[in-house]
Length: 220
Image (cartoon, rainbow, N blue to C red; front, side):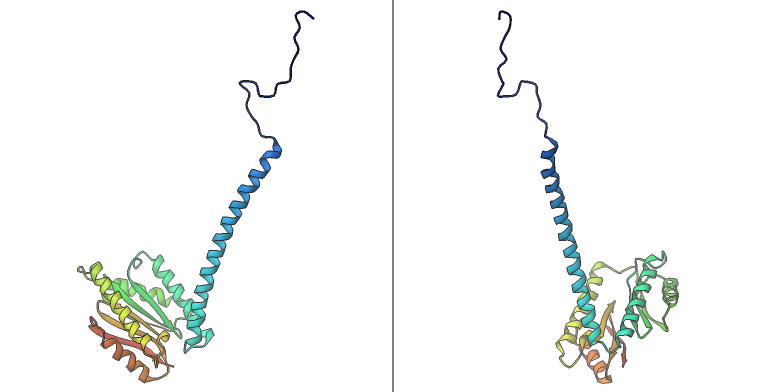
């Protein structure tokens, strides 16, 4: 008929039209994103679990070789953690190099401070933790001339002393902790005999840079 036209089916899209995904097409993409996210979370969880296992194994190994009973060992570790937390949270002493050791409820604080009042405060904080029987300190004056180089020297001395102890097959090195403060080597721990204490001191004396040795090592 004149004036009419036949409409042919259009195979392509008309100009100006936009594509839209049907609801069904969105699901695969959402599922893919969710799977990737879950996989990343799984990787992170596995990494965290591995760290916990290795950390736990180290603690168990140390406890197995320790002269204390497992219960006493756990109590001492708990006391150390609580004291460290109190020192870290205290404005007067936080930021100072004070190491905490506990053996059968007897606490030892070893490190550096700038003022005597800070040492007194550290002792006060340690005594405030339940289970602490006594607090002994080996805390020196930090001094204004304390440099990073000197701190590294202490770290090096500590590493060399520990290496000496580990190299002695007749000495259970895991039972002796070592801390060096301004060239002063401090030995702490619990061993079976006086002879072991003397061996540890002798090893420390052989290390270059050691100015003084103080032993707080106790006999079981």
